[in-house]
Image (cartoon, rainbow, N blue to C red; front, side, top):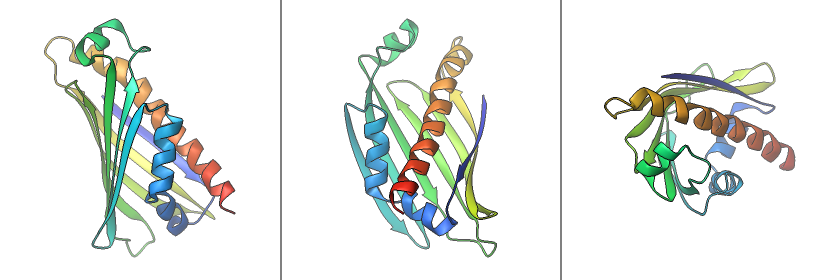
Length: 165
């Protein structure tokens, strides 16, 4: 299932990139998502960065069939692989979201790009549930939560940026 989102930020790309690779921002994302526990790791890779967050969330709001696959906690691992800055001021990368306990993964291309006086983060990916017979059903159930999570990250990012001024 295709998932495409664009997040707008009222700051220059270098400021937004610094936020997205800040361990404190990533930890706050996990906390705001209601994580029961979380881990954050940010490492510099060449001219880019690797950002990995792992959060454990309760499954009480998931459909029963999903709870039976996952159990009482949903472990989400989110990995951003940011490349070096391009000459046009954009920064490409890859995003992988894995749902532990379920064979569900989203893989996406990402681009952080200047737009006017701000920055946009484009996410264009595919959500895949590798479960015979019910894979599409799982994808349709998981997609709204993943889209909501992406949008919530954007909202938090705008709040974070306003607090840093």
